[in-house]
Length: 220
Length: 220
Image (cartoon, rainbow over all chains, first blue to last red):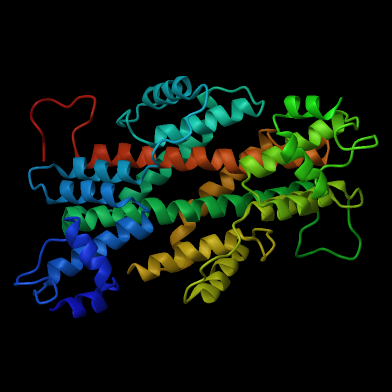
């Protein structure tokens, strides 16, 4: 297909596709010039993957390049490719306030002590350390054990994701990376929303009259 | 105390305190002029609460005013005050793409069918509907039942939060709102981070050799 059709079918503008070509994220088509080249199914698949990484994963272009390089390296074991995707999803550490490095060591030690097999460089440790330091700063002295219920739930959910077949490596590393990004990001949004709704439910049950059964009189 | 001490003790700049005074978020001190007025413990407590709402909850100033008004309304049942805080934490609906309204009806119906007592206007329904439409757009046809494991986990966690005494209404509505904001936001960050770390663990166990035990040879 030509550039115009690639743009139409992928949903990416021509300018965006040219940008990805210049950045080396998209392999060149066959032909004499960018707009006169011929593109194939693999170009479309690559653009779809880039969209998932950029739009769902919110991954910066430079880090998208790293994930794609890992996918393209046929010598690289799948587990390494998936770890690269996991880490690319993590936020870049910002605004590391006082106590962050110490809190980070504590949460890494906590997670390792639970027997989790995780790279200590995982950016999610920065998020977890940030939550610990936030609690301390706000006047709740605590150790990482305060997160134990959440760790148990997270461990069970993540295991069920793999058991449920949502992550299926049979389609190759590119398709598997897309599943990992969608599974991680979209279900995280759903889990956060459901927890907030559940908190409202339990708060209503604990402290008030049910919304659905509210009458003219209000109970205090 | 004078303005300078209020600023120093609260950690808010004088300019910020004056802004909150102008916006009506902070009650005026006793005195003839802003900087010559005398401020008390209740001013300090209010500033601390505003900081939690603004900095932890990331709540816009206008919505902070709504939550504070709910707290200050002594006729208002605690459950209503907490619901106002929950909803203020929710994102303002943005970028509602095609299928959002229908997906929102579906997720509200799903949550209600589980027996959850939640106001259908809760902004978390927009987030949950967004996750559903994202999955569909990305080529995973699904119903809200796809979130059932997450709903079960969220329900159990939110219940444990109340049972664990983290939300203790004995300190009055202002202190309870601060607990709700910290509990909702900070533990959500921790839960998301822990789920990502658990995903990495399960991915390592399923697809590769453990990081800690990696040798020179790599298993494919």
